[in-house]
Amino acid sequence: MIRSLLALEGVIVVCRFRDDGALEEGHGLVTEEEMARLARFAHDYRRMLQANADQLSMFTQVSGWTPPQGWVVRSLGRTVCSVGNVVCVASNEDCSLNSILEELQEVARY
Amino acid sequence: MADLDELLALPGAVASFTFDGQGKVLAFRTTPRADIGEMVLDMVSHICVANTAIATMQARGWEYLTGAQGFYPIEGMSFIGFEWSVVSRGQVGIILDNNQADYEVAFAALASQVRP
Amino acid sequence: MVEIFELTAGEGSAHPDPPISLGLFFSHACGVWSMSLVVDLVAIPGVLAAGEFAYRGDGFTYQGLLDSEQARMASIMCRANSLAIHMQAGIVSSLVEKSGFSPPRGWVVQGNHFTVCVLGNHFCFLEQTSTSLNQVLALMRQQAPLPPVSLR
Image 1 (tube, each protein chain N blue to C red):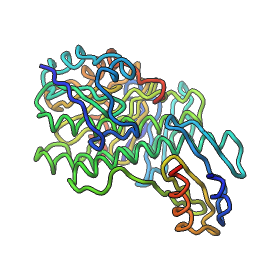
Image 2 (cartoon, chains in turn yellow, green, red):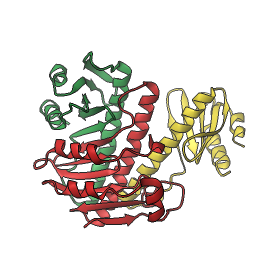
Image 3 (tube, rainbow over the protein chains, first blue to last red):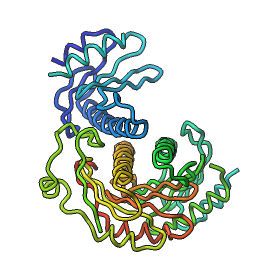
């Protein structure tokens, strides 16, 4: 199912991770070890982001931030985005962030 | 300007360093008894920036919600690892050996040298 | 008097699973609340409050000069930072074998009047002027348990 993300322009790797951060499924042009690292990072980053979202709600008393649906981190050449338990890395030059996020939301449901 | 040699002479200190607002290391000193390379210092500097920023946000939120004072501004941060600890203030940090670390002295030394 | 609270989803529980009972939590995730450390910490002059949060974000206990809402907020904040340093230590140790930072023991933040210390899943709020940070940290390092393997 998550393999469909690889069909999108610019997507280099896509992984699904378990709730403990272990790699469940991965596709793309990187090694299995790199996929496992990406899965672990995405899991840890999500956990941290969720904690920050909890605090934002707590401090501002404004709802609508939790639970966070996903995150995007963009660097000069690459973008990492994640929704639910799915994470992907894409090349900035070629990718459409909107298309990727749309597809991520779709595949993360399953 | 932080005196890195003076900071390195603190009890348990194995490295002292300065970094910019993004976490990039600007200068450092290390002792031969600890194998702390530039990559570790670079990562540790980024950790100092990240955690000080998060703590500042939390101090802000805490003071808004509770009405308490005395938490903001953040004047120092320490990350206590298994063997090493990092103590930082502003854009200066020290790495300490946990077995010999004197956190009070480290925070005080940084406070005397660095404005947050 | 130590008070124990259970958090419900959305109140700091970032775990996707629904909240579980404290009894189940005790036996599977944490063992028991380490009351003695909390009691020892608040007995130190200048310590305002001390407590313990659940790594899963679904409970906390505390003693001292905080009300239960403040203790709830403190446990959420302390847990958030602890998760962050575990991620950071994990990244450092994946780059450097035997980095000396992993597994992380805790963190300290100093404001202009108060200091917050967290070792393991225990937190302590103290007044800088009237408390020995070294004494507090030594006690916490000695008694606070290491985090569960799943966090390391």
